[in-house]
Length: 219
Image (cartoon, rainbow, N blue to C red; front, side, top):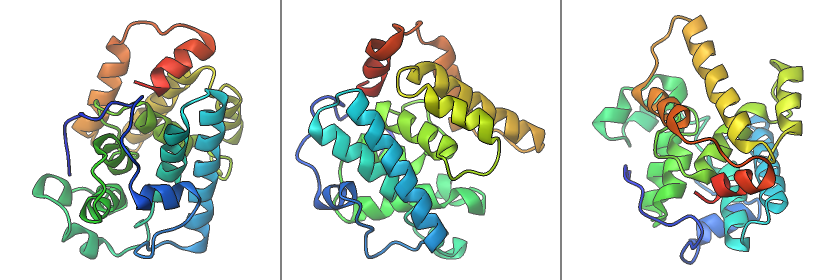
């Protein structure tokens, strides 16, 4: 799976058929998801599509955003031992609950998807990654605050009400909450998660309002 950022976010090449299909809400035939998981994926895709429209992103970007919502959990209900066999050594040692993102990205790459930003977004939507583009950052947020989540409902509803206009601020809130949750369970912080937080903490203050949010979306 690619580890370096190369594809420009504001001028994406022709979309792969699997991304186009997912952008229309179609689940790939190789997906392994329960009914509840599929509903979660659809909610995430709707949020991302709504934000893309609000930010007036180019049409191909809006398709990519919706597709990421559909594809990020496409292998969530596959058996961990099956997923591990598909991954490179540095990722196959992840806990069971974190394998599905990298495995889905790997499967998309095998299907011919070469959009590195998109693959990274899918692979690291749970862990985070310092090189996430605007799409990847939006997926981190949408996956965490989508309305079907049962925990911290008021907190998440508040953050949804501030998206996408306060995208940079809400993203920091979400990454901080994820880190605090991990620390509260006395679990290890993965380097990718720490790297994302460090990048966000070091970034210059974003222009407030929709202008700053759109700039982050297109980064």
